Length: 105
Image (cartoon, rainbow, N blue to C red; front, side):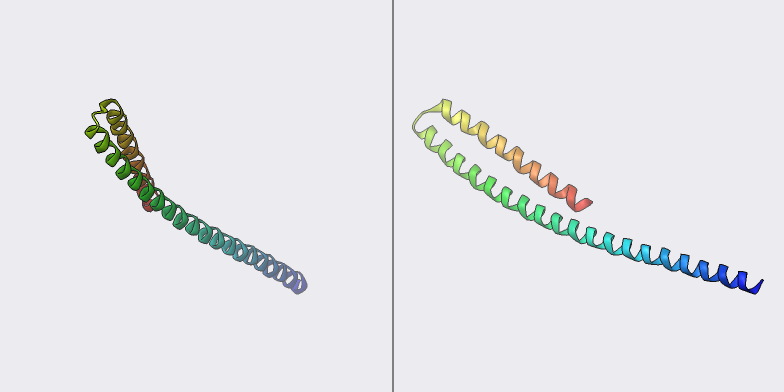
């Protein structure tokens, strides 16, 4: 009877140690995944900032062209540049919203 209890206790200890080992391995994997996702988030934020800076630069350049076109009385092209600046402003807002969504998560 004592042998049966000892064997059952030993089996429980082995089973619990296996479960604890699997849980430890799973926790390490989850920590690695979390670190990887944080790196991806930082990279995407940097990418969004870089894209936003480029869009602002493009927008400023197009506004300069628009002023030059108005001075040359080419109103049709000036109107097209105005539409382009509006599209770029929408893209900047999209990148900002995307960044805020990542920060909220």
